[in-house]
Image 1 (tube, helix red, strand yellow):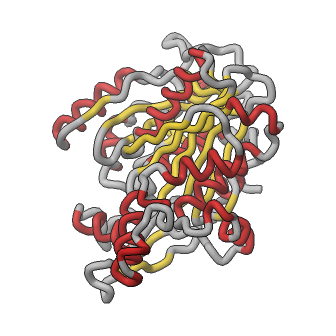
Image 2 (cartoon, rainbow, N blue to C red):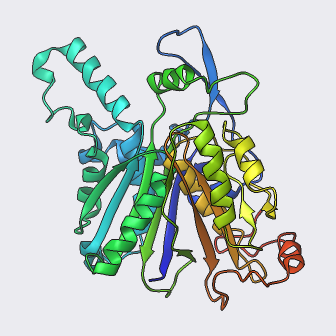
Length: 366
């Protein structure tokens, strides 16, 4: 069953809205101190909370005690459902994806308990002590009446969310499926990155926060692009197994279709370069940092913006930082081509990757 993207939404250090993901200038980096060592800080990508548009969510009754992650989540949902008629929202299913979300919830809960006493430790006063609180907030605020589910995982959980949406649509459980990922960066999560030895002065790796959302349907009417069915995710347990699976993944990729790189700044960068050495690569947009499934969502929106009449398909490898690997194949609406045929002349495809794209969102560099 074809799967189509009707709307996209995003929040990042580059700004509010998916159009900011394709800016040619990188966002400004900021410093954040470790929770365990306030005198030691690292560069990160943070959402600009001084933007007056965040006042809307700070004043929303349902979110008045919620943290930044829930607000990022709500803003991404708003962007994709703002043009959906109210009567249709009753059949929208919501799939949320988080990784470090619960850490921020727990820290705030413990701080409130220690600072204000046991009577303030009620879940009624600290609604985000439940891991999927942001999912519930968004469903209530926007009146989404379909099923809701929350997934936890690394970047590859983005693929799991899209796969779940496809199943819901195929079974007729929903008319439209909304896949949303969100993350909030705190000093505690920065400590986790530091403990994992990902934060090194000579490495371009930057932790990030924000959200990304796709509105998925089974109909091509008014769609921005198509997401073809992805293969089963490939789980790994160590680096040696990861290298082997990366080679297997590369061998399974459709030939003569350009790929959008997604791991150039993480420890997976060298593995990605080796796996995709025989594939035509597209120049990525400026780096936005690492935010688990949110980053996978940003990459999906960015890669889709490069689709054009001559570049009708793009491969998007999803390198899970801690768990598994997978990939997506994005396709331009109106293309008559199916999965790339091995007999297609590779020279034509490679030449197509050098042509300025006609973006489904706006021209790159505008």
